[in-house]
Image (cartoon, rainbow, N blue to C red; front, side, top):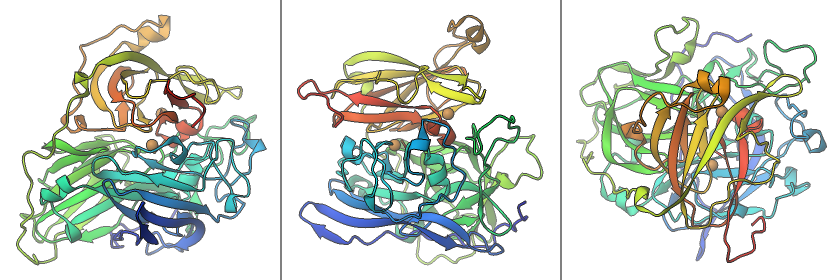
Length: 516
Ligand code: C2O
Ligand code: CU
Ligand code: CU
């Protein structure tokens, strides 16, 4: 079906920040429109029809400053026919318009009515709206530390297809502290959005309409339990290359893939210096050879090419020793250290990057045990659930505004899930392994080892964390500064859509707890 594509023939597209439409006393304003458009994803492929914010893939990059609010009118001018096969057998979706969207800015602390609730969807020109829809313009206060955030579609039951069609973009929040550090900046700070897709020989996107081993009675289209594309796309080009100078660069990397996780590695003796995670800078740089990277996670790294003049260095996805030789997803992109040094590299990598107070110092109001479970639906398809509850079941997680809680994610399935909580940045306390076979027999959790501290690069602020199979992963979060209804979910988009997502309520006793 797909054509074998030559790697490293297209230059990496450089993502430029979008110019605001206007600035006013209450912040910066943008209007961004979702459209269908065509774009070449590889030199040797015809242009691909995509959906994108402002007709771009990735969407335009927003650069924001701490404490300066950003307001975005996210307009939908998409056609009324979807680019990809839509399964309407889940969640009673046959009742809903097929093409519906809502935007979530992942990692932001904002009010519930600007968070992109999955049922706050709307169609082209707001003709039809979902039950939770309340506004056309979203506000992001940016009252949090500098970090790489990203925006993407979040419409109920169809997020995997909308994002796969191209609805995702980057958002960089800057702060003064970070500016004072003199990290590599300007031309030497490069955002990388890593995704995977499958492409037909005519350039069109391929997304299966049913699982490979589909039983005959399955609905068609039928949702897949997971989907990995066979082509790695960075900033909108398949396996691109980037020419660099022999000096330090800072890369702001996002895994925007539906399902695929990566193990990033350089094929040289250069290590990464990881300086940040989802919620901004770490306390100290972490020198690291391989970085595990789940969907929706962000990593901020310094790569020092100063001793590599003349070399080509691959950014690899280390698939492990038994990788299939026909599998091209072990390569991500190529750096060519072919440019000459323009100016002496005066950027700096300080040993202390930021101060992160431990949330363990707070009064902890409780622990929630939240189980990640596998079951099956009426067609015998895998149905993944959180605490055995479906999306539409009543809210069960309802922390009080301003309180600190521990959420203990207990993964009883046999693969990892990247769990994400809206509204907050959390800290990872520990991962503790338990006996999954025993659990499957009698439902008892018997630990097989002591709690293990998170990896050094997970000791900063996170909003998405890998919960490995057969572990309890404990995170701690302070539920503030807004009350209202948010969501938490697995960020494998095929899981999120069916049905690994739950609403949760930050309750404020001083208000009556209506939806917002
Ligand atoms: Cu990027 Cu609800 O998530
Ligand atoms: Cu989010
Ligand atoms: Cu999952």
